[in-house]
Image (cartoon, rainbow, N blue to C red; front, top):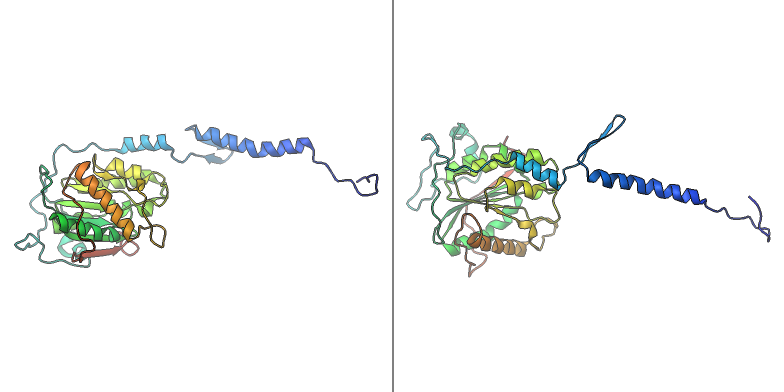
Length: 314
């Protein structure tokens, strides 16, 4: 190192070529990644293979490939369906708060209850069943208010903690509950545990399996209350549901509880208000859902809770 005129050591100067090389080492990989993002090809470097995660076009093509046409006639079940005793009001006499329907006679093979699709009017009174993950546990209270205000009866709330499409689609739990409680309308609410899911093809197959279980019974498939953007799970659900039966929740702005994931009490109320408006105007199976004058009515509906960590169903 040389000395300056005043005797101090000279400071080294960066080479222009070093700066250029540093810039290329950063920008070139980014450029290659961008080019690759626009290409469906798989890249091979020696023993390493780089494969794209599904993009929007790939996802749409995959969903279209796995989609099944909607049936033109309702499924009619055989006469061997398990039956239950009903009182004079059409309610199940025996209502369990655990899951005994998973044992005894209900382990036998069975099909969906026979059901012919009615011509819906706003005055139709329904026996409504709510099925879902932990989100359904908060939505059931404003749903109960709407049911009481419009002459419907909420007959059961099934809350399957931490459940995913695989639990609902692969197991026969849903069919057994349908056969036991005989709803005339089903609310299906889940997906919060799958916002980060990227194995969309396998979840699409499970979602198709679930859609088959619902055929023959009017339903509303309520999408998860996203707290952030998902990787395509809403597209998966919407493509599996029958036309105009899927409510896209993620477009709503909902206040959140302390965990930042689930809506809070006010958020659930806003959510239910939005669902109710959709049910009266745009849903495939419309129903009377006028706003209730009283909120927070006593909840006297049977509740079944299952933990997916202890019972996954398949």
